[in-house]
Amino acid sequence: MSFASRKLFIGNIQKSNANLFLWGSGSNGKLGDGTITGKSSPVQIGSLSWTQVSNGNQHTQAIRSDGLLFAWGSGSSGRLGDGTIVNKSSPVQIGSLSWTQVVCGFSNSIAIRSDGLLFAWGENSVGQLGDGTTANKSSPVQIGSLSWTKIAVGYQHNLAIRSDGLLFAWGDGSNGKLGDGTITSKSSPVQIGSLSWTQVSCGYQYTLAIRSDGLLFSWGDNSSEQLGDGTTVNKSSPVQIGSLSWTQVSCGWYHSMGIRSDGLLFAWGRGSNGELGDGTITNKSSPIQIGSLSWTQVACGYQYTTAIRSDGLLFAWGDGGSGRLGDGTITGKSSPVQIGSLSWTQVASGVEHSAAIKFIAP
Image (cartoon, rainbow, N blue to C red):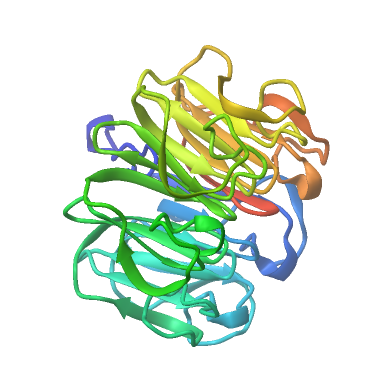
């Protein structure tokens, strides 16, 4: 295949001839390699081409290059979406329709179909599926009838950007993480403000989002300074972080990372496991620059981070338990360490396992 025919993937943009790799804990079959054995280095899953992958606590979902959706790992609460609550250690196809984005939460999933419609499945104890109920669903259930462009899932809360740019939230409202000025849970999407947004990310108990003017906002739990506003005070409505323009943000459990419009990488929040990547184990209450190179994507997991540099190389840092960094060890790193070689196109961080899509030359 010629270079002109490839589809480049940065964040959620795709490129063909891209193979899927996973590493870290293999419990419940969440690596998808047919085993429950952990791997401390990336292992390839099958030989097909993939466009997007997302990791939850104990499950994984991915979209193949033909648009079909697959899931594997723990089936508890119906989070795989295959109509069962049975674990799967290899990818199982979910329906026969085409999808454009999927995101795994702690024990649920949400996805956007190719027609723009939003679907959710899995645990629903606090209304995190957004269907107006608190009943678990083991198959995708449609949420409303409008078109959506971006989705984000946290521990028990979700946010999504509608095709008109408006931001909506639902699920657990504790710590103010929905951003509607309350700490009340919502079982259906509620609009957050009246402005237009371009990207959103959900952490354990907080949220980050980029407005259409490039400005960064945060809200929710701030006990580990993960909001980046220089305080440890929770916020139930969006608060602006600085005055510069950003292109991507990612929430972990207690730490945050962001890529500024100039490609520089920044970190803030809890640093006790080296997850900020600044060579220390110190918390930071405001964004600090990590190195001087340019980056294209960053993904925060539980106490660790993975990121793709502008040259396509993959790096990881933070807690190395279960082999989640992918460097062949279980040793933590407080500065970025390169994982393998060649060009990577998307990376996803979970609680104790990671996934990435690598371009394979034809």
